Amino acid sequence: MILSKPLSEKCTKFIKNNTSASTEDLEKIHYGILVIFLTIFKSIILFATAYFLGILGYALTAFLVFAALRIFASGVHANSTFQCIIINYILFFGNVYLSRNIQRNLLLVSILFLISFALILLYAPADTEERPLISLKLRKSLKIKSIIVIIAFYILALLLHNNIYTNLITFSILEGALVVTPIAYRLFGKKYANYKNL
Image (cartoon, rainbow, N blue to C red; front, side):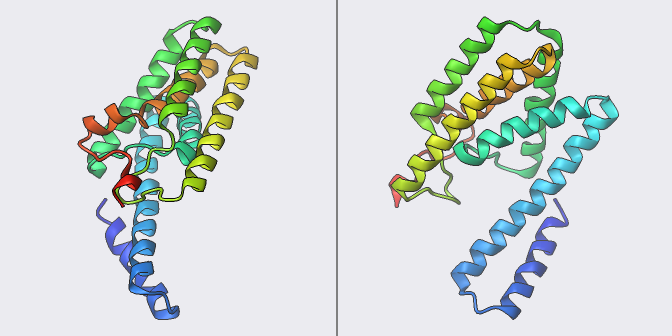
């Protein structure tokens, strides 16, 4: 987004002038701030669209469940902000559409969670070139936390007696699991298991 870069540069300049951070640290800080601003702007676009479509609550639920897994499992990122916005529309609005039109089926829920669990067990956490997960200890910790997230949401999905929200949780977890796979990385032309290249 147009404002993200100048805003992140101003924040980084402020930090540079008021701390003794090294050039390498400032580059990491600048990247982190840029990602935060981009995420905020993309979220505003997503939720504003959801609001006008009358599905804000559903889209927010799908987003939060997906984000809860992605925090620990990570996964592939889009190649541009515009591509990311389009993919967000497909992931979250597609999820809402399916969740509203598919009947709650606990067998299907269990199967999809089992698939998600297997994918996370095999491939999470999936790092990026910008954020390679070099530490073995950190990777193990993130995998365990990812598994805990899946188990917690599976229990919640079973306990809920709301058709739509059970589906939203199930599909969001599946989407979060799919983006950590090598196939997802190949689709986006990204390198997989970046920590091995260091």
